Length: 591
Image (cartoon, rainbow, N blue to C red; front, side):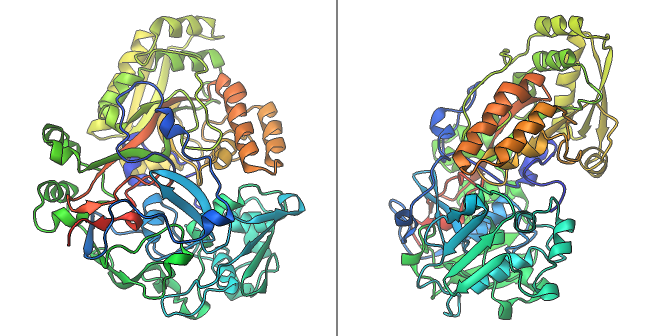
């Protein structure tokens, strides 16, 4: 697995739009200008796991939807990967729902997600204390050429995740099935289907049954099985590196042509059966993706309906800030801007705990941090809701808490009180960041706030490559503070809290260098909990009751995103799991 992933991805806070790795929640149009945490109607969305009945197709109809026409999708950049075992980005997950299916997936009704069986009849059946999981495949599921999808195809797809070249994708299957902590160790046990044939920890007793035998209790398997890495691949259609450009379809659309970095054309898959699919729709006749046009030009065409603009959406581009005023002045244009949470992405001011070891100093930083002014430097309320929790409101088990309440503008008096309690005086701290106009403004806000508390904040602006290599990917950055954005790989805290705050993990996971033996011990206990919901609640309790009292980092924002749709495009919303407009629910109001 790449060391910088969605589970604890450290990215420049102003660049999180381009990172867009993964997850979770809110329905479209649910914007807020509050300085407080997001409204509860957003926060409660990700707590449902569906039944076998919920897993049966067809998908609930989108109100007002009609069939026909071609939907245009215009993005600045092409997808880095289309091979399902290499996809590890929220927008790519989202878009690949058009042509790919997984063991489980998220059904969306009125903006609310429910995890259901996709290719499988349900979300899986555990046994042996959660170490064994069994899935049954549905009748009637087929490839784009009409041949049936079998358990062997699912097994082959998952076995590919062990092979060289698939490091760019998630490595949970290799790690969990071998009981090894990293991918290199897992490959010593099994090296993929081409090298080692079949892996005996995955059993396929018949064409409809697949059994996974893990070494330890794994309560989050149903969520992990919704990742694209759980997609089937047919061995006779596996074209190696070329599969990354044109995978074979199991979803409602098939890829007709892909001109890398230029265009992607989809047509209906005639062998997809709606009554097997509780997730997707097949409203449009075709999708035409184009890549390369500047984001501002694309948004202007969509807002003004020029060319194909009325039938166009963006799924990777953020809505350009230059057009916010224009959209706000015109209600019709404002209606074309789709707003929602950027999945489960949250922004934090990371404190390197081994350099800022005194908890009184870390508490002082918490109090002096001017969240409202910092958010304004980044673009105001549209970029996110001010956070008081580490984990996002978009995950199972989350509830609002505020460990050390402070006004959004900060409290310099309180900060000075904690500095006075510090074992040693603090005169100077360092802050590294990626230099651009937005982040330069943010840095100045922080410099001014620290100065009011009597601390000189020495800034280190860097170009993005240097910042990435030295701070985000570097094992020993010589700085005290930096901004990061983090998310999780599915809507529970299981790939967040245990990774970032376990002192036994390396510094690319535990980037604050947080050390608390009591937390390590409790993480081991929680890992053995066999119920995903109970496990999530225990992790959030640990976060609230112990970790955040130590102030290993300072919560800043639960991020938001705005994208744009054409006037003739219906069904557009920010996907509550993947954090972008989802093509699988779109239709044309007229064609």
